[in-house]
Image 1 (tube, rainbow, N blue to C red):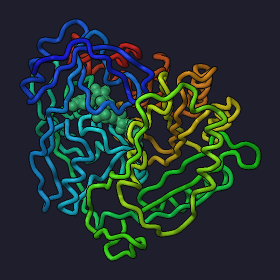
Image 2 (tube, helix red, strand yellow):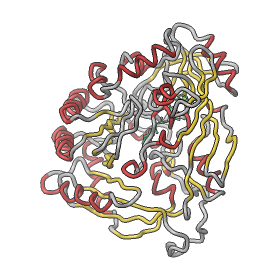
Image 3 (tube, rainbow, N blue to C red):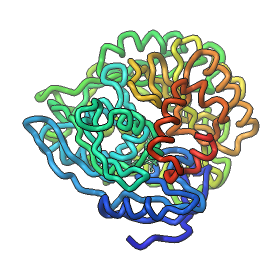
Image 4 (tube, rainbow, N blue to C red):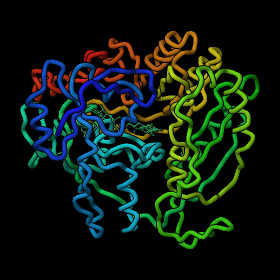
Amino acid sequence: MSPDQGRLLTGWGRATRSSATVASPMRAQDVVAAVMQAGPRGVIPRGLGRSYGDQAQNAGGVVLDTGGLDRILQVDAAAATVTVQSGVSLGTLTQVLGRYGLALPVVPGTAAVTVGGAVAADVHGKNHHRDGSFGRYVSRMTIVTADGAVRQVRPVDAPGDAALFWGTLGGLGLTGAVVDVDLRVVPVPSGWMSVDVVRARDLDELLDAFESADARRYSAAWVDCLARGSGAGRGVVTSADHAEPGHKRPRGSQRSDRWRPPDRSGRVRVPPWVPAGLLNRWSVAAFNDGWYRASRPGTGVLQERSRYLHPLDGVAGWNRLYGPRGFVQYQCVVPAAQAVVDLLALLRSARAPAFLAVLKRFGAAGPGPLAFPRPGWTLAVDLPAGVDGLGRLLDDLDAVVATAGGSVYLAKDARLRPELVPVFYPRIDDWRELRAQVDPSRRWQSDLARRLSL
Ligand SMILES: Cc1cc2nc3c(=O)[nH]c(=O)nc-3n(C[C@H](O)[C@H](O)[C@H](O)COP(=O)(O)OP(=O)(O)OC[C@H]3O[C@@H](n4cnc5c(N)ncnc54)[C@H](O)[C@@H]3O)c2cc1C
């Protein structure tokens, strides 16, 4: 494990930058050595860098690139379980599980995240209202803690340390490095999804459309944040279930019902350099209008599973579209629809060029102290970092979320005010106590941890 000194790192939003020494552990003992040798700036694990802000950065310290922990240790098809190292991507795991007719029960909007990153953010998918978040399916983890111990933790204390288990879910690498994980997986009938598409002319119609969409396993809506007047809050709601084998496939399709790796041969690639200001109020409004009009309402439309679950993975490097200053993603959850109405009104009046805005339903909260999902609505919006008045707008959005009793997602954050952390995470003190116990000298450190005084 020869470290790479002074590498500049950023999150997916490319708006946070800092340099660190990057080490690449190949096994648990390398992780132990790294944490035992950690200097005053500490160490943090990093998966595929798909968190949007500074979660996997550590200015002046060490970052552990988990890419070498890349083995799938066991697939038990009969029991529908898998044991996997933390650096394996969900895309690779999905590909292997597909051979057994199995799938991950929860996946985020991109497959390019690692198992460790999925645990550390306790990621959710379009099916949270039905299936909860990733951590629900983790039955055991190996974690290297700050004292160099390699510990087995489980959701219940027999044997294992349940508090450490729950604090690591959503703990953003600050309780220890996850080395491997036992996961429960699920059988799926085919590699296809049966998708319903509803075009909603305004926000009322959009919210109503979720009433029926919620009956399906997966649902999400794209919202046009720039449409005004009678079209304010218009959007497209898609909902889906796994398609049964023998379901009529799209005309011209040669594919079998079995899951196959997604065909990326026609994948679009954004060039390495894109001018600043390409995405502005006018270009985004025109794009949103075109997108809305081009969406075709339908019922039972067949779509390949990966295309439905990870539509943005078809455009390589799409984060560069925001130019050199990058972008931030604001994701919050609010218990009631009125707060969604208020948030969208703020975005509209700021005329912020929000190009990707996604609304989803959340179900019950998980038991961990840093669980982000809780019952209600979650809105995620991408905003260019250089846009005028952005700081003020985000503070105003925070105020609506705080008043509504909601929360902001730490895995996407790049700018939250530290005093709001206890407002959005009322059990933060339980988690801080756990961290103080397992890491009294703060060996696990990140830019985010320092910024938010975690
Ligand atoms: C296009 C896109 C869509 C997304 N959609 C969703 C979504 O629908 N739902 C959702 O929940 N999230 C979503 N995300 C966010 C993403 O799932 C999370 O940020 C995830 O944590 C990224 O995983 P990663 O492997 O890239 O980890 P990184 O970004 O490298 O790291 C994220 C955090 O995990 C920690 N970490 C990484 N590996 C380990 C490890 N082995 N042990 C301990 N800690 C570790 C890091 O320290 C860091 O704090 C999306 C991101 C993108 C880019």
